[in-house]
Length: 350
Image 1 (cartoon, rainbow, N blue to C red):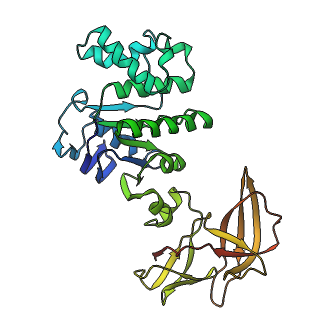
Image 2: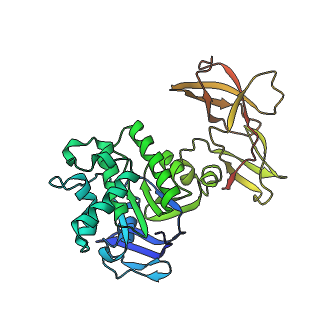
Image 3: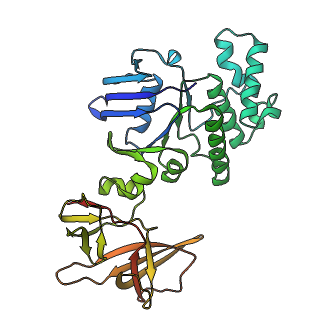
């Protein structure tokens, strides 16, 4: 049921406001791409264009290489799931899922038989005869997902479908999406502002800001090798350490950090993830920097420790954030060491 989806030079305006600006992006067959960005970045507009609910001001939408830009939504063979389930309150669960098949001319018995198969897939087979008002929020979203899948779409489009659920229900939905991907291999485009959700569900992440794609890359690469400070911040990176690249290393108050061979020499921002930095002690053999703790902020099973590094000659003070397990026995004003744990540094030239 899966197909490839491509956006070719998509632009869109609402009046004089440029919402999308020359977007080119390919979603390979059976893959999941997350469109990640803040509200107003253009991600939902791009999804609506993919669904055929909105005509772009310029550019083309292709499915399996075929230009479908002029096709109406009902002919796109795509399934769309929104933040709210939008179930028909007067129809039973099974008839909600069977609705598309009934509109396509199938008999009630045939449509219901197929609908029950999708309800089993989302683990709600025993809820077929219930009414939407008898369901919990998580169950409603599962029914909405079953209804989208019952259309047998070539592309599954998800517009922040789990943002209204609590954390436990979201985790359940993530597991369900993983199971559906294993069984049906759908092509998925996920719109989200939740970077954790994008990292869990997607194969690649496209970061949008002010209608442009800043970077599109696999999950690990976009986290650890952001193309710009803006991408680093959108992905939750907290560290931007100014310094100079020379002789294969970045030199800053954090010390001498090896960088990839193709890193240009000259001024550059080192952007180590807070999870990659580690606190060290005086007897630690690893090379690192020294500094003073300015903040310890517990956050559940982890804590965020901020350390102002001791600058070298001609260097300005720099504060870095380190994520550690538990709550360390540190207070503001304490001395601390910081080292980059076992990874090559990533630098964006200034």
